Image (cartoon, rainbow, N blue to C red; front, side, top):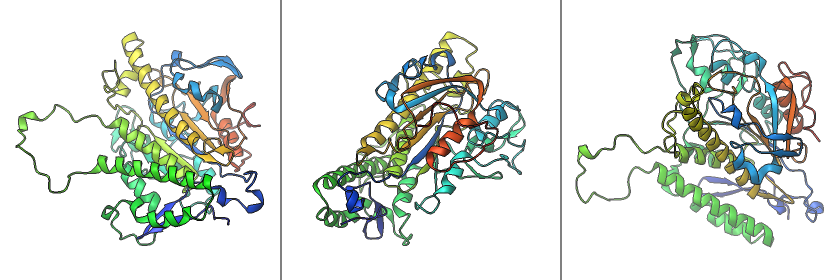
Length: 442
């Protein structure tokens, strides 16, 4: 028996995509598990840059040591590639943040606008990749974020703040809408092949509605696939429960044992930023594991994001404020800790993808997960020597386990040409590219 790659579990109007199973291989290949796997691409954007003297690894090639900020990636050192000295020339213009954010994946200079005539003057790299496989997955791409779209005009620079809310553009004048509610992303992933859109997802947990189909499928597959199905369903159950707990406003007929005094209101609500980020990263993992989409972008924050990171030990204040450190050690220490926290989240996603097996490889092996910011140092707003990491080998096409130091001001677009080539969507030129980066492609 050979299952289709697009096999779903179904029940009561729900549709739950399956992870990779050996039963999805043609029978002649099942013994060796050498069938080609889908290549995935994600771009994770962090606002406000990094503490630059704590970012760059020491050493070059495969003989390198991770910097303090990159230390959370130590166990993943062979799964990542760190390129140094790339810059986005087109964003060295106009303002501190907005040009560098909207142009992060286009490598173009956005048109100055107050909000009525947005124009990135290019299509983002992720969307070129998405177009090349548009008919192969239910969702051509998935755009996620934490912050809602910021509106109004930043009078300091004369740009609409909307530019700071987008990195994905499928047309020069059309940024793609992002989803910021993990519950809605969760529902979307399981409704993409379900025409009965009127079903109320809250009637019962999705997993409960497909369990009969899952039990039937388990009787038809081998022992290793049974284990994969069980692990997958357990992870989905845990994720559903987390989302339910995050979004629930009440429980049954519960009533308080005593009234709550208005004077007991805390000074501020508990900071839920870490959990929202983790849930969104779990959504990327789920989407890639099930092949619901192969292209995703995620924004940890909008341009000029001033998310309060006081939930981190030793940090007191907002991200953007601390990025304007004025070279004061107290500010630099906190700024570095925020950057390291973002790397910890990146490591979390890479580890999650690495835990998903696909034959003799993993989902991470068959992915490219880009992490970066549109500027180097938040105090200088410089697009030179951007902080970038690429995780995953794209099915063996990317030579990871390296720190590659390029000539000063090598185009960032050269990296994107290399990524698109590895993805299977090669281009002769992208924006101001001069060719593919040496040493990256196998």
